[in-house]
Image (cartoon, rainbow, N blue to C red; front, side):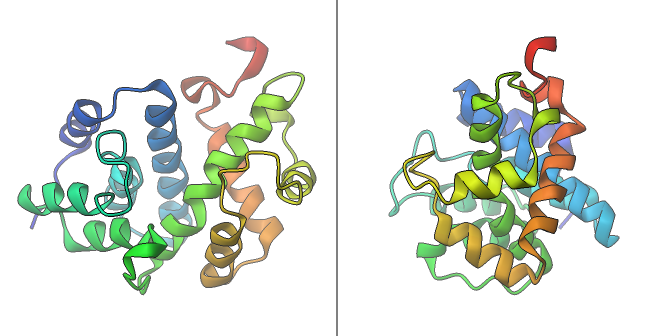
Length: 191
């Protein structure tokens, strides 16, 4: 099966995802996965599209008995590669889908953390990702009332499964997001 191009993936993403915050999240996870693909010599298009579409069904199907199963069903109908579908299934721990591929592990390790880094950025006085440091993210992770809906357990498990140091992974995600700061609304006062 040939991977649909990014234009087709974006059309699907925008068809199902209407809220600005969820759109930014999908674009941010796409950016992080593209960066990890480059780092690891993997297929940047496959990884990016997987990141973009991992939550595309969430707005319309937010329950654990629907998300991401509805989305993956749509992707399979459209003949997206199984590697993409399996990674998306694996990003929701409750599906029981094993994360055996590097793509699956990177998606799981990056999803919740990317959203958390957005939250950390928004509380910075500058509201700029360029001012976010690993130390700030680590400190906020210890504050359970901050971005309380973000699963610290999933972040920790994802980093463990990925087999990297926590600080290294956090810095990598911050750096990836900096590359698209303006597009993602993370450039702060410059916006």
